[in-house]
Length: 148
Length: 98
Length: 99
Image 1: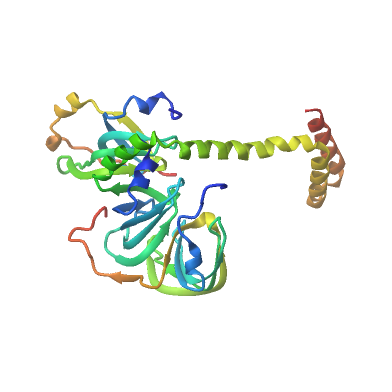
Image 2 (image 1 turned 120 degrees about the vertical axis):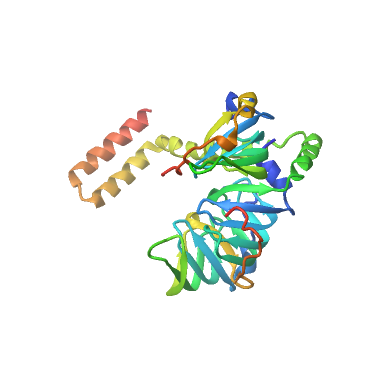
């Protein structure tokens, strides 16, 4: 079972979220995404030391600031029911894999434009002040990439 | 599974997790993903102290974000049940410094 | 960040309304949301930052400073909530959970 499937199943349920900064948020999960970003409703925020409290109608929390989530015990049984009928949810994993692969393709693909790139870099270096290095650097890089 | 053979073999077993903030959480591994986010069922935290025995706090069903996990280990339930946690004294772990 | 519906929270409903934003590192600001993008970069008008405790930078005080019109970089945004309806309250738990 994937943690994000459990989280998705917990939509509509109350939960406790602790952030990396130690603050905790109690609220009902409205929505979540594959980044673990979450939207809570009817929230009570507790400070790190547990001495101050705030009530807020709703809040959006970025996934990467989360330390952990505490979800009601019964939610795990509901996931099992769902995963049987839906034959497991792969999309989050697949989506991420492709996303990263794609972003790596970007820089990797660039060298093909060897000439244009060399010219651009030459310009940028020139601004940096090193005129002597300009032509040489840009030229040699462009040539090197052209061969590759 | 894409996360390697490591955690797959621990699913439905009791595991012990050390988090970056120095907590020790014990529970049954119900699932994980490629970011090492994990689902722990029937989990509890063990709070160590040099003054008194180990305190166990019931936590229930937890999703722990992989970012926040330092160590995941199999728990030898036989060995574990032979421990008298109330007599065990230990320094609490310090949080990870990034 | 493509394909999949990225936004869990529809910020459109907060435009021209007061929002509270917490940023990584501990800064906390409120302001009127004037704009945003899919990366969660935010434009806040008449923004006010809560000054933090000099001894404990994780704690905010009631002291503020006016920032005016600002852009909050999306990567630094930790939390967004509406200021309307947000109030400090007394301990609602018998024992503070997860504190």
